[in-house]
Image 1 (tube, one colour):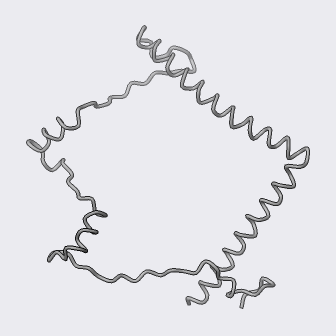
Image 2: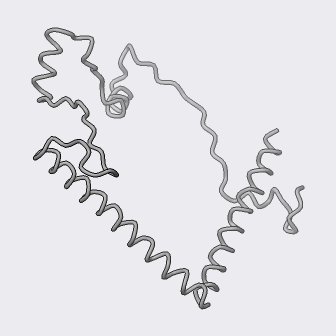
Image 3: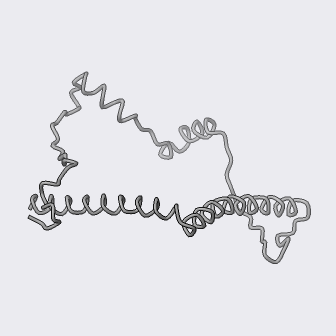
Length: 153
């Protein structure tokens, strides 16, 4: 069973390496052609346009909200609508104190597990059990599990 999975994993890793290598080769070749140069220009332009679109959306939202605040109009344009959402703002410490006094089940108390486990290993606490947990490590190079001609063993 493990042998079959190792063969499968080895073949997948080999195919992934092959496809990544070929992507690099094709990108390199393509970058030297007119189509490749045009593609690079369009990719760069697309990235810049995406940034500009996001900036325009943000500016439009801000202007629409300013208009709403000044006029109360929730439809400043046929393509723009203002929606009102209720949000809650509060001081975290004041809210924590209030909850601890009145609704303690809302207060989530937790420990820093990473730090606690490190300390617990050293202190040998009677309520902590230290166990040996097996974890499998798989070799990176699994090439011995398939033939060089690409056929499985």
